[in-house]
Length: 360
Image (tube, rainbow, N blue to C red; front, side, top):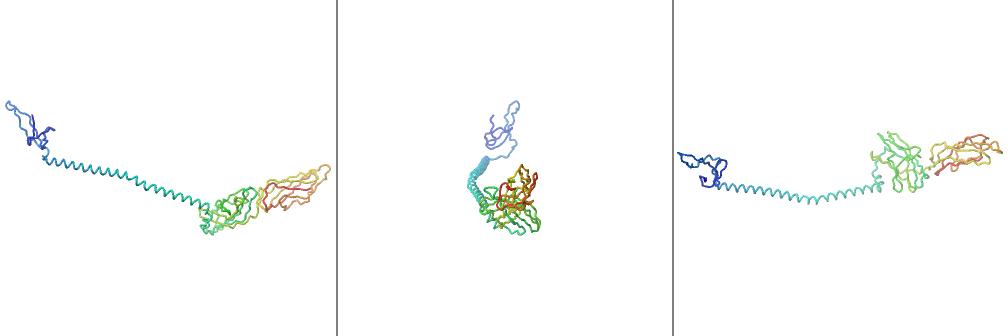
């Protein structure tokens, strides 16, 4: 059986229990064959309920072209957007390539200039900078009272020992610390203070109230060809900077005494002698008085007199201030006497053993 559209005679398709014309879109159903009085009768197509409105062929074709146009428009917009993104991404690195190297170059140049300026300030212009920036701090006082120099302990260096006085007259307090003290030499080099064993009164750290002061010694090690020029107290934490060029000339030098040697010159025998230092330490300043004790014993030998007389005592390089007991001094056979000497340390530095000559 051939089924055609009852409306336009066009071709039809079977779908979901009904026929649909591919030309005009008309839908219909065909009833089954029936038998009337023993004869088969071909039923005529019966138009059933149309599920959707009929659309003319011309309008359907226009609708298709409209859909195609919309699809192409959307596709064009998407393509343009994607191409724009690709173009922007491809253009990004060129922009960064232009600006990033310039930024790195500026930063590097600044850092190098900063380091160079800092080094020159420390080694060349530090004296000028301190003179210009030193604040007026009248409540802080620092003075050099006296100087002693050690020229004998080392061949290439001198030790300058300074007695300092620090005083505070402000309304609060001053946390004084010798670690902030340095010495500028006459050739422009700077040396930090330290506390060697040869100091009599080391100066440390102290908290000074209003009106209080402290005295003590610090030392500086300078080459032989340099001299002290300026004493500096530089407390950068509390911004206390003090300077003074009022440094007196050394009032003396340092001498080192290790042992006491006693030499007895006499025609008699046997005379025993020894000596020892009674003043503690081994380092002494010019003009100081040191005490030495001598032990002398006479043991008569055959043919010698029953006693001897000590007529003189001499100390090489040192002035004898006092002898106790005084001489001449008689020492009997078998007797042991103790003689105390008071010696003045010389102006010129000395290093070695104390050499004493006793004549009897």
